[in-house]
Length: 272
Ligand code: NAD
Image 1 (cartoon, rainbow, N blue to C red):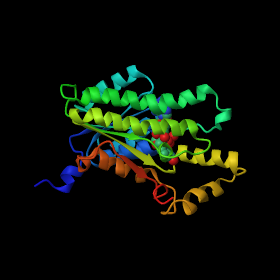
Image 2 (image 1 turned 60 degrees about the horizontal axis):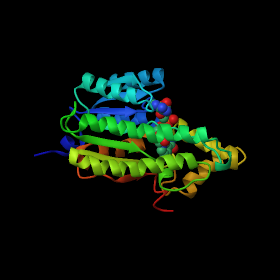
Image 3 (image 1 turned 180 degrees about the horizontal axis):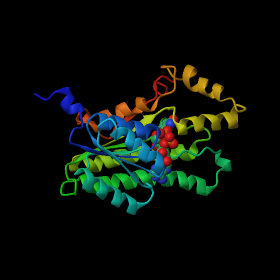
């Protein structure tokens, strides 16, 4: 009989995680490797990425780092090919790389808006496209798979100062559903994950930007607003809090789940 471990585990499978040098991406790479996957970590931050992959390898897991800018299509083709060559397949893609730029709409240069869409939307499109080409029947990996796109709570609601980011993460949310609609017949599931405030470099920068622009530089006040006041679980999230639901969506435990959005925010959205 199939055990929970059999279906929760990723033994024999290969996962590719973008933006994996630090933060949520690093935590995803780590937990997928702990579940038995061979993991390709990619990022534009090379030294940190190599260190993260080394740390995962030091636990006995299989992991490798490869430099990749997710906005570049040729780099996507090369990265997917290199992953399949190195590890023998591609079963899971976590489109995690992302950026956040904080501006009032009236102050935002068009190029800033475009930069956010390039990384957060085009990067996810290119990743999904190249993974689907590889995972579909007859593709070089060919066994179907699971694609997990990291959106945000900001992809569900509007937040002042975050318009470019909100638009990009809203696009990731509905793009993922369209990709799931096309992917089902190919054996490919696509879901989105929507973290609330998570304690990473990006999360800390967002808090300090909001503090500077609206709270006279008082980060403590902003943090209190997003924890005690709005979050039923009363704390900011940690990268691992997001990585565990990603593992669920990557594994066969969620084999009948696709086109869904999973909010991981300590209850902030549901209870507001
Ligand atoms: P982070 O800034 O700590 O890490 C993001 C990583 O993406 C970095 O290592 C960065 O180098 C990489 N990256 C950026 N542009 C890239 C590009 N063009 N090509 C390849 N890699 C690139 O941020 P994080 O908090 O770990 O965020 C990870 C994901 O989670 C992002 O998509 C982010 O939007 C999303 N998210 C974060 C929070 C939060 O509060 N931290 C909340 C909701 C959603």
